[in-house]
Image: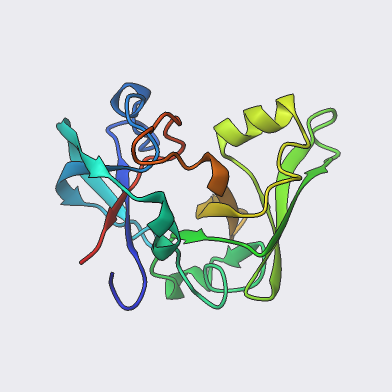
Length: 206
């Protein structure tokens, strides 16, 4: 923990956009605690979590108890500085982080059509967090594939966890994204970890 909130990192790879190659992460499972060797901290403006790591040193340390998963959640009053969909170029300088893990009280998946994208509606999540309503695009590829196959599969779900992030600057704005959606019932028991890794990140705490 740091200043009352989880201390997240975003491992970045030696690729044009910093993505971690699939072959490095595909063998890991959700709720595995993974140890990496950080070789350089590489913050970029509000993305203070960025780190370079030794790609030859990645190992599983132990399993994380899914019953403790809620303890990893942030508890900020507003998501990434405000209650809107984006942060302006002028305001981004006041933000010192770009990742959050939260559990909303209400949520609904919606589709939004755009004139410049005929036939390609954007899948979004409308949700409530700390009595504020939000509406962000979903970029989680695993969730999008599941939703494409069955648009109703979240309707009986009572609790989800959201990994939230900020996109790159676009027309002077930084838009908020739902980077990953995890259903509580999909969190495997520590004895039977079978779910695929949906996001690659490391949690550091005391």
